[in-house]
Length: 287
Image 1 (cartoon, rainbow, N blue to C red):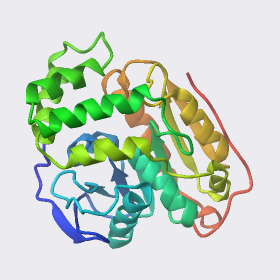
Image 2 (image 1 turned 45 degrees about the vertical axis):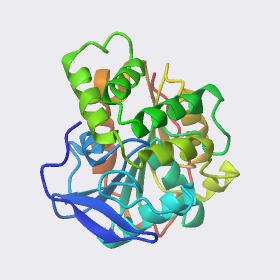
Image 3 (image 1 turned 45 degrees about the horizontal axis):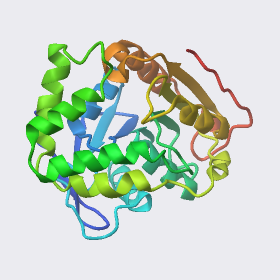
């Protein structure tokens, strides 16, 4: 993971400054929201091939964003997402894992805020993770607090597919990610967010008639493929893509770029914009 080469900006958010970066120009404006322990840099590959202005944010405690003393909940994350979206007039949004959860929380209150939606490796929407999964985050939180870069690197590598762990690009990513995380307030997120859920009832998403793309992956127990299937089933106009094991941004990087750029390149007819509504459903799964 590399830090952005362009200078980022700070936006006065609901509970503190939020770091964000905008690249490109023109319409549409797409907002990209990272996952837990993610960053602007780790989210930028999803924007490769996407036209128009692309904005990336750092959630609380990540990057240069403040780490407020208020509770680290999905409504709080959704408020930060909304603040940046409104500031840059984003019409489309892509969320990864925790970012996808924050997007779900935002949509529960304003179903038609965006005219295109992408959910990558979505987190469970209205049920808690198995006990073994949050335990991994707690172990990582201890390493972050201890400034243990070697320990963080080893844990991150252990979470990657076994056949790619020793590849130089993967090891370099883990080392850089460890440097980014060590000693940061991200440990607070690791101790709280995995125990939270974006919604109490996923059926509220039935009101989100916006065209959506949901990308899941087999063999990922942190982001089970069934979670992606369930989310796509609730969204009336969702396309579902389930990838085989191998890493969304490792073995399937080219495919993900194709999926996201193609989906976000499609124009939205005026009658089907975020101010309107769709009447049909289109769930497609490709494994």
